Length: 139
Image 1: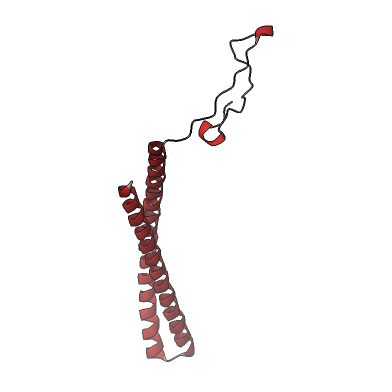
Image 2 (image 1 turned 30 degrees about the vertical axis):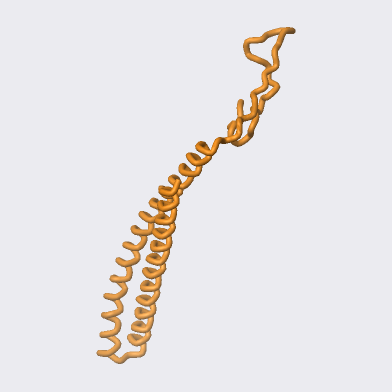
C-alpha cells in the first residue's frame, strides 16, 4: 500500500520486496520522493484550492438563501399572529391579551433579527466569494 506521494513524500513500503523477484535473489524497491513543485504546478494547485473554496461558498450561499426564505415565511406568520394579538389586546383590554400581544411583538422582533442575521452572513459570504474570484483572475 502506498501513501499519497504528494503528502507523504515517500512510499509507505519503501523497502518492500519487488513482486517479480522471488527467492534468495529478491530485489528491494525504493520509490524516489517527489520533485519540488514548479511555479506553474503551485499556481495550478492554488487555483484549484480557490476554485474549490468558491464552490463551497456557492453551496453555503444556496443554503443561506433557503434559510432566509424559511425565516421570512416564519416572520410573516408571526406578524399575522401579532396583528391579531394587538387587535385583541386593544379590543378586550384584558391583562392576558396584553401579555399575549407583548409576547407576539417580541417574537416578531426576534424573527426580524434572525432575517437580518441571515442577510448579514449572506453579504459577508458574497464579499468573500468576490475576493476569491478577483484573486483567481489575478493568477
